[in-house]
Length: 234
Image (tube, rainbow, N blue to C red; front, top):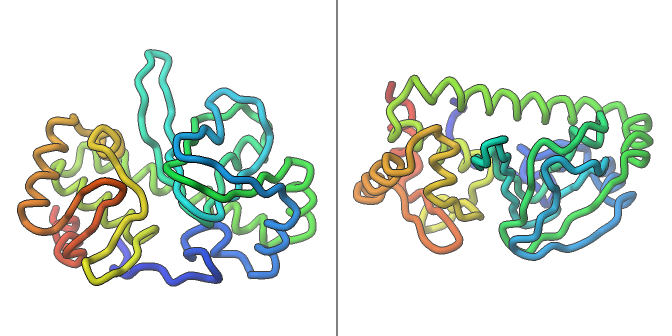
């Protein structure tokens, strides 16, 4: 894992996001060529199996990416925040949507059509490069999750997950590092590949140790350095 630090912003977005990685001029142009819209909490932005070929650029807020299996089981795959993009695979290859994306709260976003995106990719080779890096990062993150499912105790998996989310999305404050979205215990179970009852026990222990505080609307890492030390125990 990388040394613990919350990413600095490049413009209004964290550097871990697509818009935060881009040169500010390219990012501004990409936002300008799309259609601005807002979304409310619980609104579905992308539906699994849908045929739309648009890219969504999240300007603010947070969204959850959930996939449903043929048996009806739902699994939380990721959380996306302002600066991130969603729907990039469908916009690039035209395949049906592989997951459902739902707004966690009020959001501002930009809808970019496939034709407009193609034009921007032709105009800005750097944009193609950063798209590739974004997709590679997401694959690497998913691979780490799969490897950790069998390799670490659930408490360590949970500590690693929360530490990584803090690295990507956390905001420092006097109370600790705050994640700007709420993750339920079933969602934490899906992200760590563990039973919900086991996650409940691990989360209770982290709270008792003063490392994590969970409440309505947010999760706060009270002692992020200590949580990171736990995450590295293996």
